[in-house]
Length: 328
Image (tube, rainbow, N blue to C red; front, side, top):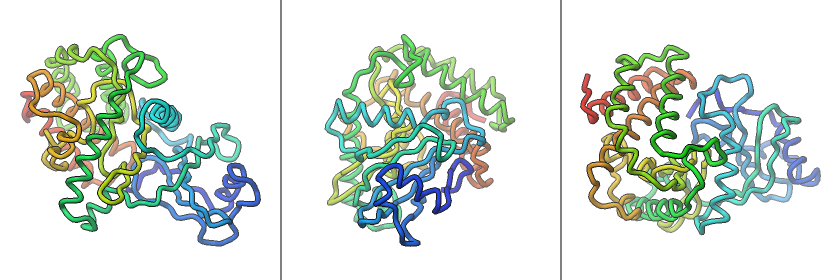
């Protein structure tokens, strides 16, 4: 996915980054040592072949001069915090982090090197038809089970992993949602309706958020393209930058409960252990769908995405608003 947030670097700079991380003896001399990995919407991602033939992955945060949405500042640091938390408090497989540079000395952006997981990206392989339907279903169910394990991690507060925290989920979620609306208003994103109309849809149902009383670890973006699969099993979860302490029902794998353009969530829900939703859970899930839809539409301006993506995101917002009793 193309985006102006992708901080691509020339080979000479990539070699200097390798030297800092692994030492000068591992600096590649071949011309084809770096391959950009195209999946992902935000960071630049490279598979790097070191001089000894070992492969690693380099992830680079956006350039300092690119406008970001409010909650996107410092996302790589949030990802590193999430990976450390998952490593310490669960058995969920994630790549090993080899080296982190937050100094801004080589490039004016954060970056880190991590283990290369020799397995297909689940979402890309499924999309390309490389996996039989039964393997896709089993993998998605296993991803739900992975999600259940992650949500066993209980945090000290609601909101960002390292704060500032909120005492209630309603306060944290509403503050986050208001930030997205403010981001959209700042660059005059057309939501297809007034911002107050969208805000009222949230406010009318926000009391359901009070039923969430324990801050659980949520990846937020745990979908098939953020996992690696081998032999029908998830062998690594990647892209932890949006993780927070909140309500597990907001996880991306459940988006298909409300938006038909997303994968059928039934296998994921089975793995997660989710059956019938209560009225409160259904309302909360619809609020999270609204949150996601507004975010996707606002992102199109910040990422300078094509009009086809703008139209698609607007359609998702229309569905979300209709689910909350405010059809166009």
